[in-house]
Length: 334
Ligand code: SF4
Image (cartoon, rainbow, N blue to C red; front, top):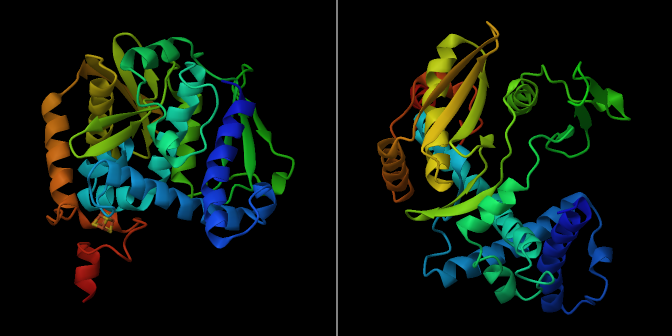
């Protein structure tokens, strides 16, 4: 699928979500693009309308609109870092995962010729892609190239850009036009970007695809770092060997879920320890028990059980500390 079509789908999702709110308010809907004043207001509109679509989706599935449904596989795997964090992160990002779910289903429906054009009614939007099979996903995966030449990194504000060029021998980093705003990959504030950067430079290259999978009470969104006919691949980077022992169960869990979702028997995991510049590699069978234990524990928290607190040092750099009900650090202060 070309980038124009992808942009078109994103635009259409935006159009769909904005246009209905305008109908309600009696405003002219013939030129929705003129309603978008700033990125901020567009995001707000999108959020409101996506929330509406999400509540219809939950209603169609016979569940309460407050029940958590769409989750990210990587988020759930962090259950083994901190179960409460996995829950809070999943709650915070459900709308984003729902958006991804819609986008993928529409995108692949078009690519597979299951629909001729992007639908506009809520009913059709939500049902598009329901007939996509795992065989279809395998066929789409087989068409994917192993590695794109360049990748773009965006900050949360979407204003700053760096291009990382992997096509040359020296893996040159191209600065965006406004280089004063280029991302500082060494910034302690951007661990996720650093991880992604490290992955692009050091990870093994395999094709992959993003898709959604119903499991237990949830719909999981997942994209492994790679998929071959034998295994799913997961790459992580971490500062030192001490942290590696805590990252490893997360990487294993994530890969176990991917193995189950994409029906692969093995997982290949690599953890890059930055301090020593060593890459630790393991290839093992998918562990069904770990999947079941994670799913059971996470579901219990979603349904009201209290999570077991992690080691207190994990809370020091946690973005949820101000609203976390179980942090040992917060308890110590009271
Ligand atoms: S503050 Fe601590 S207990 Fe709470 S979510 Fe973060 S890491 Fe977990």
